[in-house]
Length: 115
Length: 116
Image 1 (cartoon, rainbow over the protein chains, first blue to last red):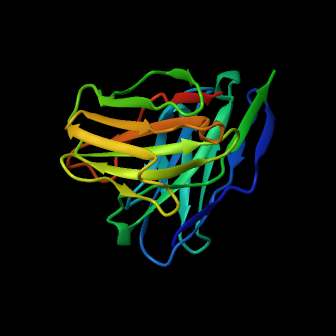
Image 2 (cartoon, each protein chain N blue to C red; image 1 turned 120 degrees about the vertical axis):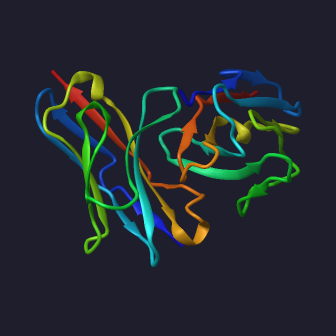
């Protein structure tokens, strides 16, 4: 069964600084990978996804992520963050043997952007 | 496009009563909807997968008699928490999968349930 690890529970960063949120997954089959953002008391919004093809995926709000199969990682990056990026970020994976139907989420990383 | 709504956004109920939460796909048809539960400062845990016109598939450890799911149409799924207890207090989030899309799930804004 797949699992997702987000090692950093919280990442503090200053405005306009770059940021990387780490995500590693474990699976023995092909996977699809996703990053979602959650603002307080709201549902999840899809930032970006990797299904196939180019390993560098660009998403909304200036975020991008790179799929590294050998390291089983899908880290999220942004070159310059804004105060409004403060939120909870979830990495998720779905496996081929579930028909890519189910999403398994990591525990989340809280990004705290300060002035 | 691809908007999912949930109603109510917040609900407080007394222990022992039942609460129904609605999940609607507003501008698309969803053959499959998912129900998640999120505890404070924790991740989303899939509770069940709801398919239109058939019985829901529950994840291991989720009581199907306590969390009743109905997916009567392509745009509506409901979750009823029966005989609620304080430990059922949580944030419940639904998502809907775009018909024909490859695991493209769109999430509702969530419902915060507080059982007193």
